Amino acid sequence: MRARDNPFSVERVHAIRFRPQGATFPGLMTRLKTLNYRAAVVGRDGSGKTTFLEDLQRALIEDNIKTRMVFVNDTSPLSDPACRRLLSELTRDELVLLDGADLIPRSAWSLLKRHTITHAYGLVITSHRPGLLPTLIECTTNPSLLRDIVRELQPPDRCIPVESLDTLFQRHQGNIRVCLRELYDLYARS
Amino acid sequence: MEKLKILVHGDKAAFAPRETIRGAVEWNLDANPRRLDLSLFWYTSGKGTRDVGMVHSTQFDNPGASGSKEFSFTLPEGPFSFSGRLISLIWAIELTCSPGSETTRREIIVSPTGKEILLGSVPTQSPFPWGRKEAGPDSPEDILRVGP
Image (cartoon, rainbow over all chains, first blue to last red):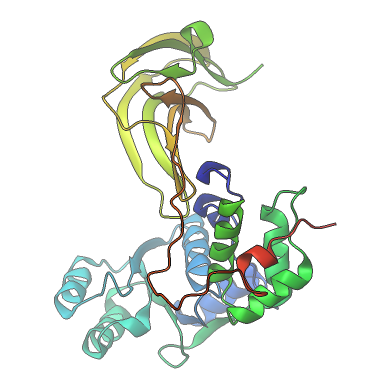
């Protein structure tokens, strides 16, 4: 199958937005306000943290709140100098959305956490573990979520059996992103 | 009637590198847009992060609620339109209206052969002599079955 026709291509997968499990988006927005816009999105790899953060950014912009998204991962770390530069550019009306807070050095995190109390509108982070900031939401996955997402993406004439999806979910310990990548490969081979 | 339309002379869909694309855009909108943007670009689609290359863009300021304009773009040497299993490179002409979300896109092929180049597959070879050669019961091949 040509990449452009693959139902699990990145752009098609990215079109699937975050689905809060046991919560509602307006409810989360209210809770974020209650937390004074300082909160953490917690969850394992492939549980939707980044997707939620992107959706949150959209919702904040709609509420006329300025945002600054910072992505941190193994290939783009946030060093102390980079963190200082970021903070020097930050304005008080900006809300920092930091994806991967638990991947930055402890010194940079301390600086960022302290500085944004008085010099930013807020700070929302994603992290694999709780404790860095009050938890706004713990992202979780379940086999039913994977089934729903796959149902939306897969072509109706080439459905993947539910049992196979459940097996896939178990094999990747609930990491939906990896499951969808594997499904891409499956269709690519066909 | 479509609100935005891209017409290519002769309804041509495939072009050679360095060839000139000639056509016209037509619009029929509910309100006066501030601007219309016409772009020629390529983008990738597939497993990885999307890559985009903007080649030409032109804008029509205060074009009125309806009208038409001719355009011509000369294509560069490449990249060629191609598709493999991991990535496809797609050329397109896009017309967008601002403010608003109206947009229309017309895909084209850029290739010396006049067709999208299809990348062949490379036989899988395990770098490890002890690697599994046959698909196992938990293999992807086993999972992907046509459903009822």
